[in-house]
Image (cartoon, rainbow, N blue to C red; front, side, top):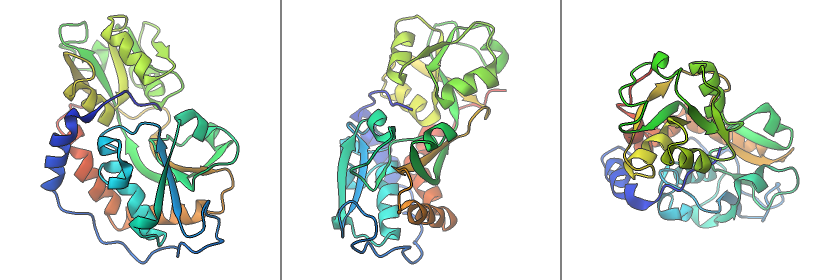
Length: 282
């Protein structure tokens, strides 16, 4: 997946909502000690990568070191499970494509909304999922999708999505449009096509869809509704180098955070404000 340039106008809303919610559940004993010589890029440090620019609500103000935002908070929760203090976490930046390409990495794990797929597993490792996103349809008010309330109403429209993404697979299988969908190299290109009137609606993961309409990244837009699950589940995992000695430990950390309720708490804190109230299309 790629993320459209959704910037800081949502900070106040997300932060205010987050402050009203309880903090995350207490963790179990750390799964590792962060000791030197155990597979980390830098002994005694945990090196975490995110995008060259990190977007909200995943990272607030493009500052992952703050721990503010869903993925920044998840990263520090994993670090804690691995036995690292906040001051021992080092952040680096990578492009989406460079991180997922085969070869050595300059990070211990990378977090930037990577959908786990068998194809990607040929080149890199993933932890178990820390989040599963639904897919939603975004359209412009006054356009052909305005007033659509069910999947049948979407079938005859010209729809767009990023090629090879879970959004595209869900579009094809959940909607089965009668008009061939338009597929683009990135979410940015797909949303630009919607802005230009070249397509009637675009499919995005639900948190991104909501933020795109609220900032708004897509002017005069709204979320038509969420689609039923179809195709490849949009499960996001922490990305590691292929055959990394840390994959098992990182996966155990994520599993612990899921089992003790921390991931659910962080999702509620940072993402529920974005997804609650969006209708489910049938």
